[in-house]
Length: 427
Ligand code: AMP
Ligand code: MG
Image (tube, rainbow, N blue to C red; front, top):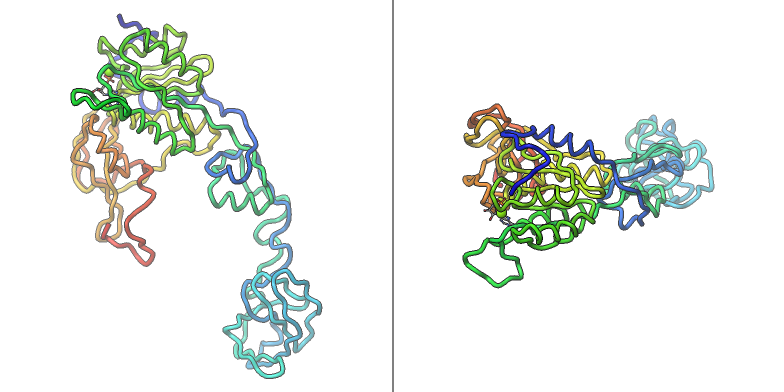
């Protein structure tokens, strides 16, 4: 018989309320030190400061000639080359009137020089003389000392994601070890008598367990390697054994068996094992029967079994939780506004997440085309989705051409064409 610590409500929390409830129970995990080679994708747990001025002195931004701008005010002008300076050299002479120095990109400017003239804008003459045919403004093509960073400047903040660019900054300030927040340990459990595991013999009457793997990949996309606990059958004792193992992890994701069917044992079993259930049901579609609880050490998400519901609930509720645990400042998927290619039906009362693909119209504006199949049982609608179009809970339908808010999924990071010189509409 079903019991629950939360009396069933007909509607449930809004998505925002559910997110707030979950995030309110999470503080970032402990910190650890990792080598720079392991830091990519993690959240920084310390403030990082520059340990020197960069550039350390005024340097040339081009291959060319270091000059005194006053010397080439009246052109054409001929100057005498007194030395060659390459990156890493220390200039030996100070420039006197009528003199210049051949200089390479990144090389220190000799004293007296205040301008660099690109080699393309000069003409070599005999006896190490150079002609400057046109005047060049003072301070051209010089990178000033400390222009990129000054010793003591904060260059990265705690909570920032360590992107490839941030790895470059860390290397620049010689931070071979980085303090980051540790990754959560995540377990994934599927539940249902009808499920067939990937390594089980093919039985045409069974339903393949796709949720374990789709959730695995969603977790992996955050840089976390989850453990797959397998499939618990719809028997309370067997389910309890699996869940007990799962409650040793920081996060337990259970899919299936969270609704009101007589074989939906997940929530009562969790309650028996001492977990506190904080909510059940969220006003969203797909994903309405989702539940969330906590035990002494774990966050537990009970995701609906339908493959799309499970993935969409992960996106809305699990993802921000994992990112908060990992110490990230940015918790949510980036949203954009784009035009809808055609009308889509949505029902009032719940926020709907509609799977769509992105392309461009003839003017180069982004267009979202909702997929023809929006069934929560059709996993293929997730396989080709770049974005989840958000139909607000009070909107009955979304009209063709409506400018609509949507969340960008992993697949949206890439497109077919380069579009460097204007947008191509062939995508
Ligand atoms: P449930 O949430 O257990 O009522 O399941 C809802 C639907 O999702 C049913 O059609 C299940 O067969 C299906 N389902 C449940 N778990 C999985 C899974 N791990 N992989 C694929 N489909 C599933
Ligand atoms: Mg089931």
